[in-house]
Image (cartoon, rainbow, N blue to C red; front, side):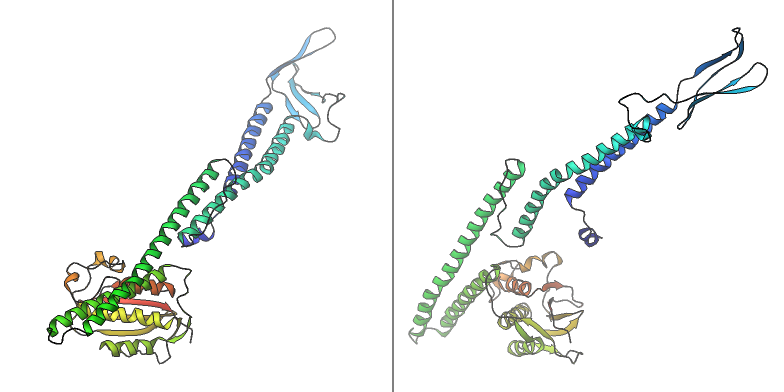
Length: 395
């Protein structure tokens, strides 16, 4: 129903114009009906018929009957029982009146024609005014929609001196501030991530030159922390690139998704469930990004589960579907959407080894860049099931 309404939505200017035309039309009809009803109810008249001597031959008190083009008639009952019809012809046309043969210029119908002409004039005169007003509203709506879709460079024409012009000025001012803040934020994030690589490289070099007598456990702890920092820098850089819609993230090409998933399953020690469909599952995308998304899902499953991790790849209604199942504690329904937020982790997850809270956020960003979706759903028997969907090529 919502899609049907969006498809057949009547523009605002047309609705306002139709409302004005209907209002004038209804006013015309109502006024004409009342006028005609009032004129047709002529007052009662007393008609008396006398002879030459002045005697009353007949008398009646009645309403005249209007005969189109013939004037009015009276029916008079005579004293001898007969009934006479008295007709008064129309009044002769006076100089300056409408031309003969056009009775609609005279009488009650003349007002109806006048009101009809007024209604047409109002309809024609109000259309450009209403259209000009609502056209600016359309431009404002289109600009807000484009800005909401991620095009932060959109600005709206500020012409005029009315409320719409003021609203456009406020929107442009707010959009410029938001765009400046986001650019500063992304620049700071990218620069900070880049600068972090230098001290990490020096720490790694110092670790290699460390005294061999140092405890191996201590060295392993340092290496683990360096690995987590390095992973954090990589994920922050990739997240900042994916957030910018104008950034080129790579060349889209045909990818055998089944083969890519099989390679990542072999790397992570997960079990790939064979697909019943013998046809290859080919998608259009960036290989390194899709590989990163599958790898993050598998690493997340390994991190929260000590049991078996299984992966299913299938084709469903023109989409390639990858399901990653684990035997861990699962995800509460109230948090299945929040786990895809950057740096959000479930309670108690901070004590687990590895993970910085960006893995699933990157999976969603990569999936959206490929016009797909990812979500966490129920799994019978416990554990978590992540479902990734991207459009696939037709067989």
